[in-house]
Image 1 (cartoon, rainbow, N blue to C red):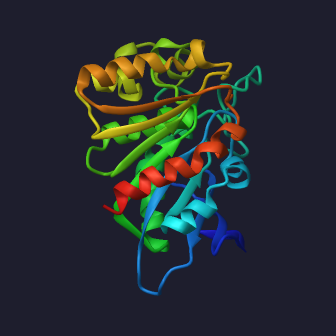
Image 2 (cartoon, rainbow, N blue to C red):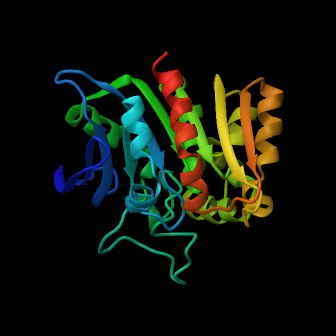
Length: 279
């Protein structure tokens, strides 16, 4: 791990770091905020998975999470959304919703994506191991959240790792990628045409197949331009109702899909995580 930058902020240190990833075969950049703490003590950690077109920098610069993290004593980790670098394949047409910046938190099985697009392994195994070895985290107290494509990632990671996370939330998540254009495009290219393999990366399908969570917090703006076509929160609402999962779904009047929306409710989400991780 190499340090790109470290700066003081909100009574803590905001760092940006890089590593040579064995999962993706590329360099990966991520940010970590560590509040001030007593020497020898550990703190809970919240993982934040970003959305389409983003890097670690979007939430780091615009997410407004540090004050709440300092207040509640939470470490905040934000990885990139996909591998990057020379030789990493991208969409031939330069589409913004597939390829670079659009890894969808899966381990691709189809060529040419399979060689580098292994974000599932990176965010579930490799990065957590590095963070646990390097920063004062209490890995028995983890939470996960994310936005849009990252909300999809947060939900599927939590549903497939029962017991790992004490708290789960999402901002405007893609809840059923198998049923919407963004997901159809990404999963068919990364995982191939057998739609049965897609269910492992579809939160609604996972819940239908028996995966569960104690409870879940989701916020979405009613003015989100992707609300009806790509996000479809009503599908998650129905799946959670059928499965007996306690879902708090806040439809925020007039808010859109941007970081103006995310930053408005970030403190609420971190308070939710703190209440469960510090219980």
